[in-house]
Amino acid sequence: MQKTPIILFIMLVSNVTILFIVYYLSKRNVMLKVAPILNGLDKLSHGETVVLNINGELEDVGKRINETSLQLDKQNKARANWISGVSHDIRTPLSMIMGYADRITSSLDVGENTRKQANIIKIQSVKIKNLVQDLNLVSQLNYNVQPVKQTPVHLCKMIREIVVEYLNNNLNNKFDFELNLDCNTEQISIIGDERLLYRAIQNIISNSINHNENGCTISVSLAVNGNNLILVISDNGKGISEEKLQKIQSTPHYLQSTDERLDLRHGLGLLLVKEIISIHNGTVSISSALNNGFSTTISLPIKKQ
Image 1 (spheres, rainbow, N blue to C red):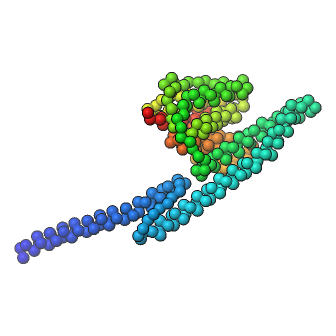
Image 2 (image 1 turned 45 degrees about the horizontal axis):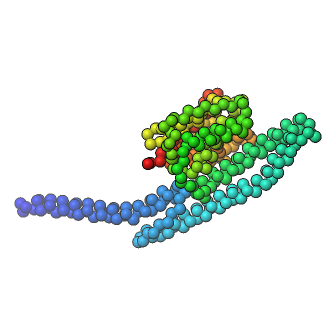
Image 3 (image 1 turned 45 degrees about the vertical axis):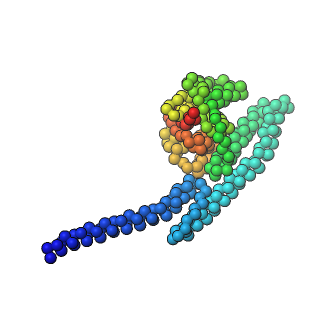
């Protein structure tokens, strides 16, 4: 009788220990089975294709996720192909409009007012063409249809080429360029798709030109910060209000805009830039203030030697 409390205590401790071990093993077994499902759902939420091979009690769950992934992949490709098809169909009539407008602007048989109107049609047609191309590329990147090449890219050299291209294309005298390229960036390269990165930088500079009809100074700087290259493209133009800046940063897609104006906005160009930089494991941040310019900062990882 004197040993009974001790025996009961030992039995209690033993039972609690056994229960804890059983609980731990059971939880571990469940987590091992659930982990692939959670990983698959995470990939699915990021638009990636998922193929799970799960046996046992959760086999049906794995099959349902695979079916959902396959269906979403088909829908994404269908959307991308539809946008690509529409973009292609628009090019022919748009080229005709641009061609006729160009003929009218260079014709001496029409009045000055008619030539000015034809020139406006030509300029707006070019903007529509660029918008269609951007929309098509955004769609391809969103739905992982656009193949991304992985080659060493010298960003410093690329920036010089882009600026020279703008200057050689008879850019309006109202626009000036300031280059501030750190000498340390000359030989530094990143891994990525040169064509896409070229397009991203081009889009940012074009935004500054398109949104500042009265002209501005466009500053481009490139520097090294740790293991990253920091590219800053800014202008001293009219900028945008804090409300519009918040809208650009929070609106998930350009096409959800309710603005019915025909002039270009920062939306689609920046969406394309963000998509391109994202697939290069970089980051994009923007800042602006009304009548105080617009600035875009890009951070890209440096290629490890």
